[in-house]
Length: 174
Image 1 (tube, rainbow, N blue to C red):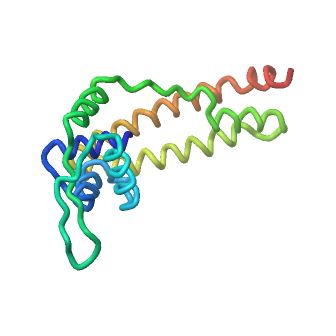
Image 2 (cartoon, helix red, strand yellow):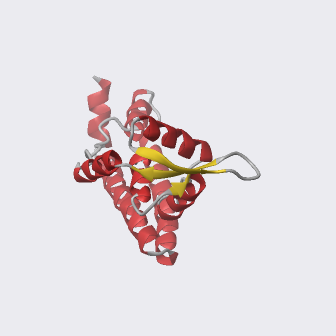
Image 3 (tube, rainbow, N blue to C red):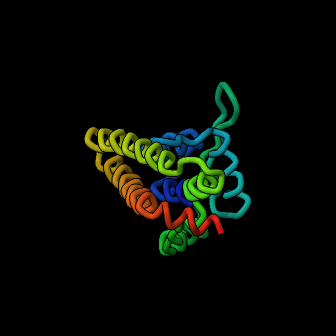
């Protein structure tokens, strides 16, 4: 996820302080990975440097000055371009799991055990996500669905690989 673009998009509804941006980000997108304050302020500094935001006001308080940021026309254009650009699908062409299976075969360990253990871990994760989905709001349900679909694809791969272990063992032994 592009944090900069997400913060810019949040600023389109109106100027905000860094604290407010962090809170809005965490509420909408940070269920599993909330932003750190330092990340917000370093991102805002970079966006300011590139002319995508401007300081809309500075308030003095008991602590450090609080800057209020506003998105610029260039920032709006940048968000529009980012939203219109499709994300590149990320195939897992060199997964750690595949590497573990091949190394197990090369070192004469039981690759089937590795696949079984991984299957159990995937199923455990799927149960947790399904429970979270059942209790969550629509945004959380959609996030959980995305993760569940990926885990289901992994499970299909685990089953296919388990069925082909003998052939894979022969191929890697060459």
